[in-house]
View 1 (tube, one colour):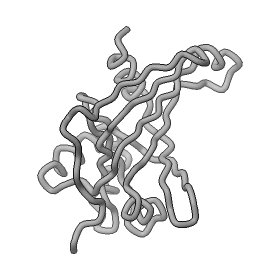
View 2 (tube, one colour):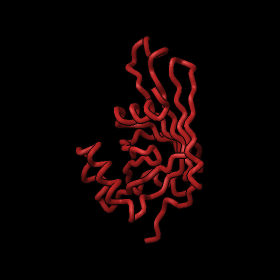
View 3 (cartoon, rainbow, N blue to C red):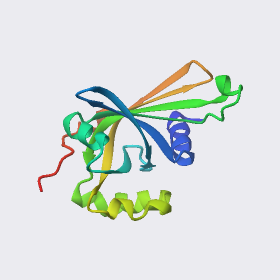
Length: 158
């Protein structure tokens, strides 16, 4: 199976990821409900604007996310896959918001009200690189930075 297919398969079945952000006091991790674009270039999640993760993203937009296929059994040592996603987080631009919110709600219908709440933000991670580890130590990398780069900030002027 091709690397892109393996990444898309894992993103398709995993609804949650661990988000790592950087704050003034050090690293911070959070569990977030994610949705991914079919082209693998963007992931989205919703968060409250008064959260630690949002504050961290405003000051340090580089992020890492981790999702995996573990089942908490001994066979995970050789069968589980772990996917690290590296990228830059921004508050979803107005021109992309409706499309990405619909994609997020389709993946997480139980959270449909969350991205619509004025106290919440729909965050887009522009993916730079995927790192996939399988069979304990087999590593594969998909680098998306050849797309001309990305500019943006998380906080919007209000």
